[in-house]
Image (tube, rainbow, N blue to C red; front, side, top):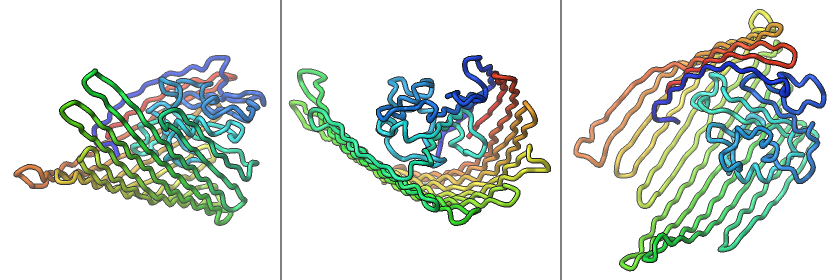
Length: 386
């Protein structure tokens, strides 16, 4: 959850260049561009076995970090519409491009994305014809630095299982001055498991379980003292998602989940629980060209700063969005209304009274696009305030 105020106003007028078509009309087109959205058809690149997912994303480097090894902090990484809880740098470097069918990148997500809507989304879609695959990768260097990465997937007609695991160890030494030195030892573990169960032709169940663990020990060695700065963090979560498709192609989507965090930063201890749930309905209205999305979401975050304070956030959202396509025109209108309640109790001061705060905000999205030939014009306005 984002605890501080986030406000953005975006007004874009986008003109795609002739070298980057608005739609991949030809079979050999690799990049499909529509305003603030990209679609990279990886299969049309005919990648070899050495080409990685990072190499593919370098075709659109604006979505990568400055060092070119991770995605930009303003984007989230997902696979088949499921958020990934693994180290993105290791994931991008070890997943092979030949396993991927396409990549969809959206810079301005819909109002259904909640606080995640303040970030763009990079969706990775695997090839359907690859039923079972897996790999183990090992990298290492001096002083015991190394990474062990593994993933496995089994894609069946009814059940698809994907798992990612990562272990990373690191050791560093520094000499800021001749008088003292610093050492840094670290151990990190990631595990992500997702199951996609097609219960029937119209019903689908997603299950996601994940955990992250970080353990770092820093030591500052001076002539007059030796000081240790330990850091410990564990993060675990579980998500259950269900969808039902109706005869008119309308979709009902419901999800419940939660995560737990425990952290010790040099003696400063913190715990956090975050349960949430939402329900969403997408349906055509009057005509197949007009779609309505309505939904509601509620979450509660409870954070303990051991011996200092306790913070709680209760958020209730209602959202609606209309998407209309007619000929060359594409129109989107959306609004997300948020009611936030905040409680804070200080334990490290004389006054232990409960401080409360309430706030209501809106998130607006309006977009109009027009396609002509190999060009796409788009005007977009987004206001996000949490």
